[in-house]
Image 1 (tube, helix red, strand yellow):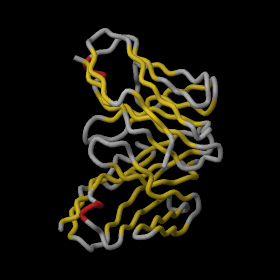
Image 2: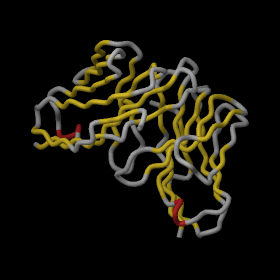
Image 3: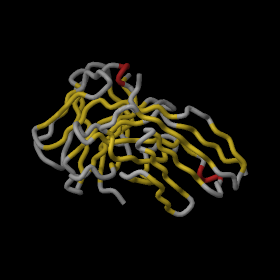
Length: 112
Length: 111
């Protein structure tokens, strides 16, 4: 079983609030990813990192930011949440030899 | 044009049938190929992973890769109602490490 954890699992927050979604993995993976997925829709890559102090924007434009100060930790921050940010956010990680990627259980965010 | 195209579905098959799922890709830098299963409101679960052309079998699942044609497939034999889910193909590029997904195919296995 994959050791990648996301917190919180569910979050309801008011418009304009700052939020940070946490993602941690204990597998020593160098690559980590954030995806956004609306119900019944496809995954969209919003950020990824191939190592400490590296971050890249994904295919889907996002108002969120990420940081990668430690190998095991890849938090995603929204400075000012809006209802359009309501979605499921999924974190994944992959090992050094481009091995298979594992997902966390996701954070379901609702902005009211 | 998307880098990864997946047959959209949905697919509905009777129990015991063979399910065939397909993806094509355009980026030659994709070197590692995966299939995921996703149940509603859950994170994707890795089913199979391969990096070479040919077939790889794991129980009722067979993953097939044809790098010359840029085509991958997943076959599910003796399908069960518990196989009902959305199946996603995914690929990692060796030069920028992006993990790219197909849009997913929803499969329903009827008892």
